[in-house]
Length: 413
Image (cartoon, rainbow, N blue to C red; front, side, top):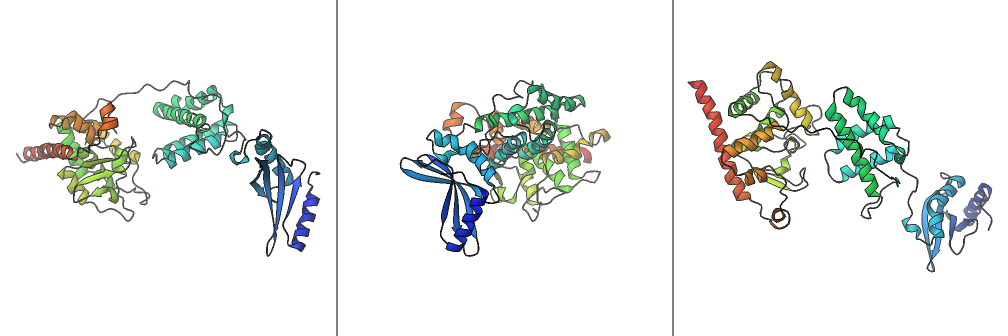
């Protein structure tokens, strides 16, 4: 059978329009194995024309749609058929597993990785997307992802480091390495369907050294804890009120800043005085009974119309971001009104002072949802430790209340 031409297609459309009968046009030979066909169907007001890859396998005929004519031209569909289907048919493999075999671009890889983070509920996708968007502009969005060399990645990171943003430079390195690592695995993961085949041979960011981690040791002593807490109750400078309440709740519970910042009405059980997160940073559910001081603070807050306890000042449909939550604190130490404190310092402070209050390290770890790596905890122990957590939080509440009252008595004297 001769190859199709645009003229033959137009004539066939007219025939089907007049006869009202379905017609199939084959592009060249191929019966017995498979070929490209155009299926014409008469509809009440028009004739539809669909390009199909057709295969005969084990005595059965299978079809896969490639597109519509004329939006996909004859030349375009031949290219797609040759690229994605012809080789499968020649090898006797099913066209049902056919995918777009074009190697993915840098933009394809980064967008697919961000979508993977979104689909898995990773809150980091927002920062990753911002970082990779800038990287894609520099490397070239339409370049093949497999064509990026390690020195090109290094040249993207170096200017960030040179301007003093060493932490950001390491974040960007991590984003690129993770995206390529995901791309290399996704092509062979039968559980997921990647929108592109990237044909990656190596990870160009794998050999770039990481920035040395600065392990923090800062924690607030009892006087500093009280000083910061009292300032947050009545700041001497205009501050969006939800932000000061969120930081006080961090100080009282020792939780991760992201999880307190995103506290939603659905997560608070006022009767039981429990905050319950269905998913956390380490991907495990987490629930804590809060001390009375924290329960009173939460109950004093009216969630906004979207259910957020701590909404963003810029967009009330979203919770405050963890970076914004601390930005107002970063501006205060120069004035000497509060002690110098950074993101993890409050979590470290809770861990330290709660130990002084008499809470065992095991209960402190469970209250802060630190991962427990021993075999017993990981694979066998399914007790929720809620009674032990309540006992621990009662000790902590008594300790903090004593600190705050002691400061008040000191002032009165």
